[in-house]
Image (cartoon, rainbow, N blue to C red; front, side, top):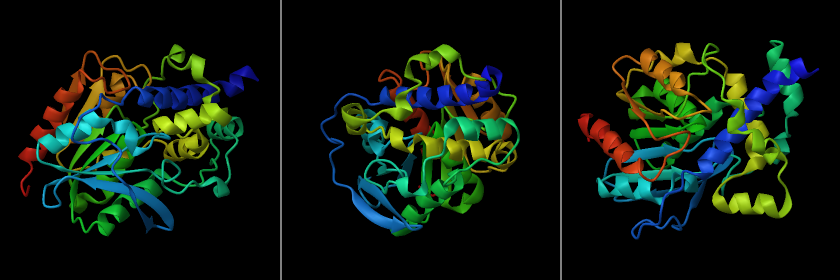
Length: 307
């Protein structure tokens, strides 16, 4: 029985490890962007999606896609302020099932151990929605904002979503930044087990503890559904290889959840992409690294014609 549940434990450790690491992404307070700016809610693909647009409407737009169970708040103020200071309009939104966007409890909660066992045996898993659905939410938001195109930035699961946007909607994607993400290829290394051993029960967080996570921008209730979206997507290498927009792949040398080969594989598949590894970065965006990340993104964005 323990042997059968090993795939579940590995995937679950990835999920909760990413969840914990995203908590560490929030930067220090900046004066201009407070993070408390009001959100607007729009019905997109039958789901209420909460969003905000920060910066001049006529500036080049940067669409920021957050990762597993995280709201837009997890980007932190430093990275948003850094992009604003470079002259960009920053579009922030909460993925479905997180933040002020619609919670999709009515779709049911997959039983993780059972779904992971099915996946390990080669059967289709129960994913209430897909990464592609989430990518379509982002495209729908661009439609609401009358944006013909944007620079698309995604972190972790958000990087997977951003890759799908770039592959399926190249005309809407001025450039792609894939941060600490993956192609999902099966040959890539598993996470180090100790990275999330202390957090295996976080999906069951309830009551005051859940409320505290919600205040940080973390929504563990969404994890079973979003995790199944990742698992159901499987190996996306063939699709990633079709990406033809200018691309920057960023990764941390100390990432124990999605080790550097995940970023290396993404870079290898996208012709002409640039790969940057930060030596003191894990599966997070440390405050000391954020200025370098902003500079790297600005270098890519400013190189793209049409800004």
